[in-house]
Amino acid sequence: MADTKPLTIWSGSSWSGSALASAAQDLFRQETANHQVVTGADDLAQADLAFGQPDPETVITSARLRWVHLTSAGYTRYDRDDLRAALQKRGAMLTNSSHVYDEPCAQHTLALMLSLARQLPQCRDDQRTDHGWHTGRRRSDSFLLGPGQTVLLLGYGAIARRLVQLLAPFGLNVVAVRRTPQGDEHVPVLAESDEDAVNAALAQADHVVNLLPDNASTHGYMGAERLAQMRPGARFYNIGRGTTVDQDALIAALESGHLAAACLDVTDPEPLPPDHPLWTAPNCFITPHSAGGHADEDERLVRHFLSNLAAFERGQPLADRVI
Ligand SMILES: NC(=O)c1ccc[n+]([C@@H]2O[C@H](COP(=O)([O-])OP(=O)(O)OC[C@H]3O[C@@H](n4cnc5c(N)ncnc54)[C@H](OP(=O)(O)O)[C@@H]3O)[C@@H](O)[C@H]2O)c1
Image 1 (tube, rainbow, N blue to C red):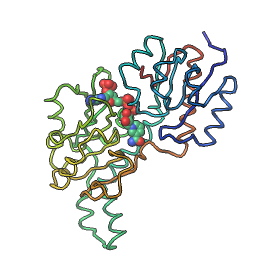
Image 2 (image 1 turned 180 degrees about the vertical axis):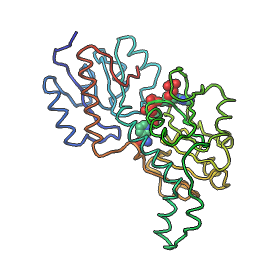
Image 3 (image 1 turned 120 degrees about the horizontal axis):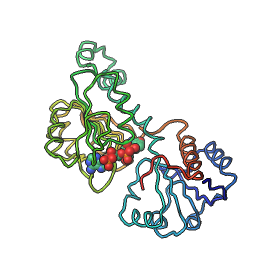
Image 4 (image 1 turned 90 degrees about the vertical axis):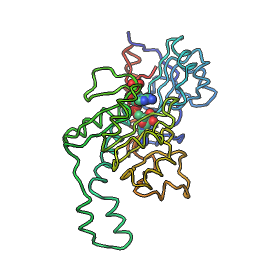
């Protein structure tokens, strides 16, 4: 049954805390004109729906909120037993924006993998430093992404699923780790609890792509022991969250040459302080949490919400449902 009554929609910020771009705000206002939109922090408890990054405490205590849609893929602040229990008790839902960020993050990861394979950061360094024509070294250090190499994906969510599609033409062997394998994945998936299998996969992988969220089970997941398990000369990529990696151990693995390179889009803390040792660690390439970014990001966030709003009004299942 379609819910045609005007709803009170609380609208907040993007994941970074900044206001949405004006074109996205215009689109939101235009498409929610039949509803009442409120924006004050105090208005949240009186809203039927929330779009943004609402205060988790109010999400728990509000008797009226029926659905919260986050403007992020990460939902660490909401990943709490009390919040889950409160929403389930009153039949409320939590959705996120994984399908806004899966494509840019998967493309960014592929770009990082190709840039290492084709020695692009190193060539850029040559251009910015000695203008040397290091053709012999750059050619011989270049390699192909292709059969015979293994990629291990840590986490098998929206980003991983899209990355698997993008990697398909290269013919790499792709394996993933997740908490609860479902049996319907498009690549072999190991259960995170199967430590022996995960360690064996780490030892075999040429590329370890970390797509883990920040939660109690992932803090320091790639610690000194798991980094040591990695195959010598392997490459490590972090698109998930900085807290999932022991950064001192990672720097040591790069300095010793155990790992050939690391590409980090996320660090702990963010922003990374200018004097942080990761900036100068050998073969460590950093992008500033930009993997999910794209020019029309805010408009896509609004369109994703509007698509879910239409489903909500029709009583249909919502995309990217977390609770
Ligand atoms: N760099 C960026 O700009 C950017 C942008 C968007 C997102 N992100 C980060 O990327 C993360 C993943 O995004 P997504 O959209 O793919 O998320 P998602 O769809 O929620 O997938 C998360 C995956 O992580 C797995 N997981 C959670 N805890 C684990 C553990 N301890 N061991 C192994 N696997 C575990 C989950 O397993 P189950 O499904 O079995 O529970 C799930 O497969 C986000 O949470 C966010 O932190 C970064």
